Length: 415
Image (cartoon, rainbow, N blue to C red; front, side, top):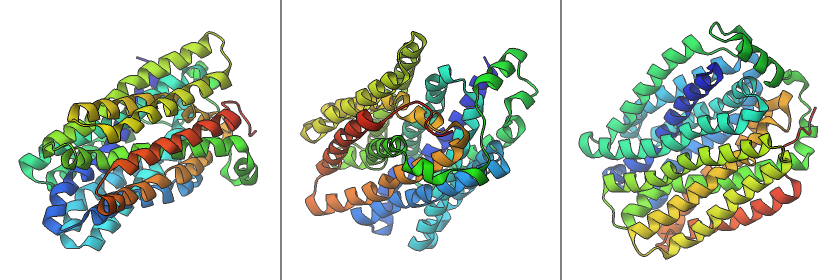
């Protein structure tokens, strides 16, 4: 196995833990709601609070990463959100305010990890392997969501809701010990790298600019940057609706047990994980055969958002758990193509400013975590239905497709 692939797998584990630390609340909140007397709106605020911190820290993280190094920042971020996961039960027992503060702080730590991860990946990814290597890292998130949901469902039923937080918090601390031993920002300085891989990454890995010279106005005024931001926003709206509310949807609407709802909510993420490798292999294969980079990035994004839109529109009409599972799995499987469409362009539009651009895209693109999750809770309390959450996501996908076809690109636009 190449060293670059090994590093991506290690990052994937970090993303697994990051997503597991978010979705454990999606399952734990069901018994917590009964214990603490929350309504659906309050539960939505608890689940959405982590994303307030998550989006607020990514731009700052993009500025910090060049000062302390991407590898160190990734490790410190994982250390932070793992410790905060461990203290979540104590915070919930102390007060509702303490719980919200802890979840916001957890989101801040997870937000710091995002620009650091992309800055690190930029050094370790040749361009013709970006979709496949990015798929490895992203699959950590798409496996972390179902893994966290399934494990949390069984942990909560067997040992109480607190156990979900203790388990993943301790796993995160163990990961940090390993990461600080093996991670290096510069591939050439890694003691285990081969001469062939050192040469490959020196030629194709790109370099990071000095944050003091970032052309902020030039970046923020470019239409391609905003096309990327808007498409990230549209894709993540659906992701966060699924991430937070699928266990409750399968429990309340489809009548599935607590452990079963965690399993049913996990299966769409497994479908997405499998399709990540299919889509990335197809995308990189097209590039290897000489297809135009913009054509490939636009094709994959249209497949992702367009396919997800069709399945999202079917969910409100699902009359059985099997039909609901088919529609939700189809939506997430289709969305996997976006990680070979718009997503790699965060490494391509401004190679010298990957950390900053990732912070901007992450800050604005993750706003759905703050808006969509509480909004669905309010809609359920108001209308008694989850349907509008899925319909809204489908409508946003149409908007994202139009914007991407007009303004999207995978070429460097900022020197």
